[in-house]
Length: 363
Picture 1 (cartoon, helix red, strand yellow):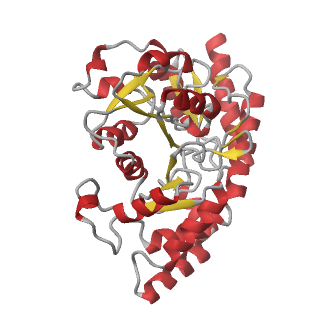
Picture 2: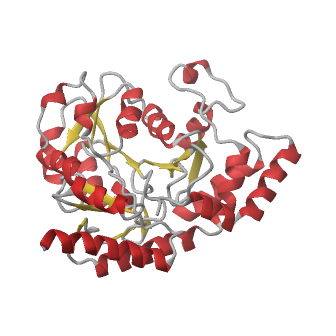
Picture 3: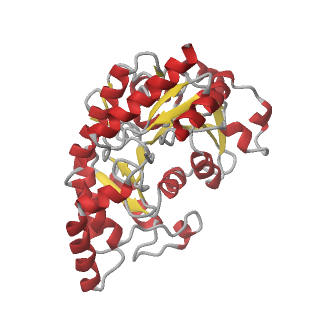
């Protein structure tokens, strides 16, 4: 059993995907056409944002969002120490220096009690990361940011379909960034991403920054080319029709797994969070044994992530700092796949295999 089954999803919607790509090829317009505009409008409507600008990747979206706020060399950005390496890369590419915050042991997201001691006169922004499709407490983060005059840019790469207090994540800050990487809940065919905002002036600036038909030398000096293709937009428009169903199926599978595996220490969604269950993560003191055991029984597990971000950047003075909870997570975290394409039989098999491992450990 694979962790993701993207081929099943393709065959489910194959006629619609092929019709979509044929329409694009027949048009002869492959960049910045009507389908891109249509996707931006549809995705904005889904998230509740006023404006969306589609780009070449989620990493590009985060970098460009920081640049659009004139955040760069000499500025500091407060963020989590436990996230994918691309999160760190996107921040450093803007020229800003990330200031890492350790995480909460129950949620895997930033420990808000540590925010106050993390800011300096050079701090310009907070970049929360909605970890594994769960969500940060955006009320606490926004309240803190307002009190200290900081910009909030949400990283919602893994959280399409995740809601906090009934509102889609990525719409609480000045901007939210999204990824349509193939394995996400709204995965495309390759890399692409987007920025959501309610700020009209930012929306206009971002459209110029991604280098469409407008060229401004001042803007060009602080950005780069990053565009979503018409083919990618056409695929995502097809998938948008089924997004609510895809998220619901992930949630249904995740609830079934957690209910039937009470012995597993799953991460807990915070109050008010309705996660999309991008992956279903937990902590294990026997991670390597568990991975080997389940792999031998036909279930491949993934580790997100076997590292902490401060140890990936030797140029950052925080490289030598200890982050005990993040470091503990990197050694113990493991993930199960609540993939929307899993059959009921496969979910039952997955549960039985995990139970068998725990039973053998206790014997």
